[in-house]
Length: 90
Image (tube, rainbow, N blue to C red; front, side, top):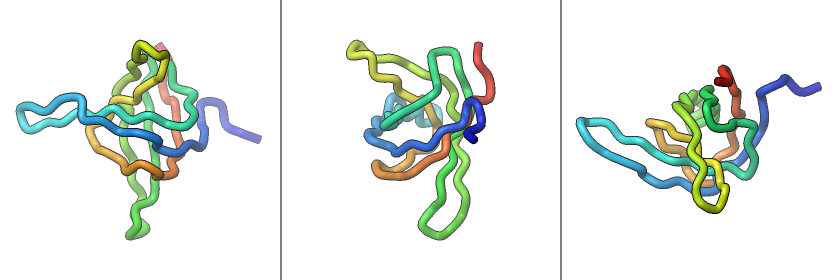
């Protein structure tokens, strides 16, 4: 049985959205998502070293083609398998 708001996905694309003041913001596309505009949560992945990476999702943007982009401050590599967890829906 799956947990509501939790899903498995793969990173399909990543773009740097902005950089300034020592801070970077990235847009990550996934092959599937349960995040919608107004949601926040996390993407969790395993590093090659075996360390668990937890990347906060700060928000969702939808482009002109209807593609949802997950806004994060830590980039993940294309092809990375993640577990997404929606923690708050607005």
